[in-house]
Length: 118
Image (tube, rainbow, N blue to C red; front, side, top):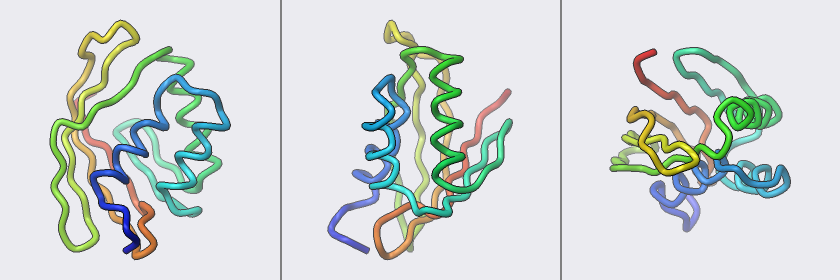
């Protein structure tokens, strides 16, 4: 793994979901996930940075101004488990959920899975 730590990596990834310009979002995603990232959640399954960026932009269209903050992060053997909260644009808590991730020795996520009740 590079000098980045898993907590910082997850924060960078979460920051990419905020209401920011596309160029900033792409920079954050490319610095935190592998090109062929596999991502899943209760309502989506996808692969690749281009598809992930499309999914994030669609999320911001549906939930303008929403953002995330990690409550806690655990890491072991190239894996990460996190609890996070989604906030609406006005700062109201919207959802608390969990993510599981795997990362490579280059410090990029290779798999991300989000878990919450629909």
